[in-house]
Length: 498
Image (cartoon, rainbow, N blue to C red; front, side):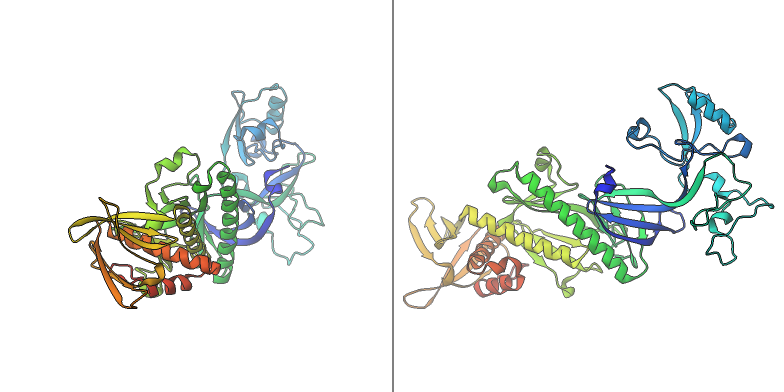
């Protein structure tokens, strides 16, 4: 069965395509579950010689491959395409041969045939021949008296009264049995797994009007697809995003079979990372993010092998970083769907995605990954200093906060999560905790100094969020609940106020 036939078509429509410096031309898009097919109108031979079209020196037309049999050597080689002009057969130059001579050479070529061809990317040359003065094309039964676009282009087809896409003309080669039709033919195929799409001019925050492009994982680009309206553009983007998401989820399930429970993948997907020091012509670059086990991975390309996971551009402990979904007032430029990640060192990373649904998917995945990791590790201990003495602060999912002497392991104080009424930091190293004494109901201040301030702050936030999630499972999909719970428990003068 043909690969594309096996793919369930989910959407089809007509758009314009701008490919390079060419003028936009009409194409048809077919969106299937795992592939986007971009098709252009072409004229092909649908009957007659199975391999090559009419033509030859007598018509001043190249002999063109018009059909390639399925599952045969020509197709399996992947080197021949419909529209290729045959230049040589087993080293014999046939460019100036008559059609019958080319046929004879092919028949005598034996079982092994070596063809030298010239691929005519756009319309073959004979499509652009001028009309002969004595050409009288038979109009279709729906004709309004004007000539057909095919006839205007110089291509003259066999007329059939029941087919409005076929014409006849005495000037066209009259090889017996040949019949030509105008059909939609594949121009480009974009596999959707790990592909990305964008409405923006590459590297900028400038959005194209009702247009986008899709880039396959191997770098093959669809060209700029221009939709008829803003609504049509959004529909296409959402449909493509849904299919990519479904493929990614299916792929994650297959990959996770090879990973232990504590190394499961929760999220994989493309976004655009804003450069720290953006150049004038390139402020954004494609970045692939993945949430797996305890880490957030930042890649230049999707990881395919196990070895690829060791070559991430950057990795972060998921419970020691902070993710913030940006409101319109927080955006740095004209890109709309953005979020930031503050690392354990305090570095701010700025990311952009294409759609609201992409942003929501990332947010849910990050919350889920954080919850799962906190639930797995249960506690985290950080070295700190109290009045020049080396201490340790343990954040325990079950019991709360425990401060102990690093040398003797003697516990100085402990409080439950519910007893933390607030906190503040100096943005450098010190955190002041405000706990409520369960007996006296008085607020007790405890100040500790850390070498990794942001990691500690983010870890505390992650444990609080996970604690709330245990009480309210809907929290995992509800950012409002997360923000409310965090703000009621701790406040910070760092870049992220929680």
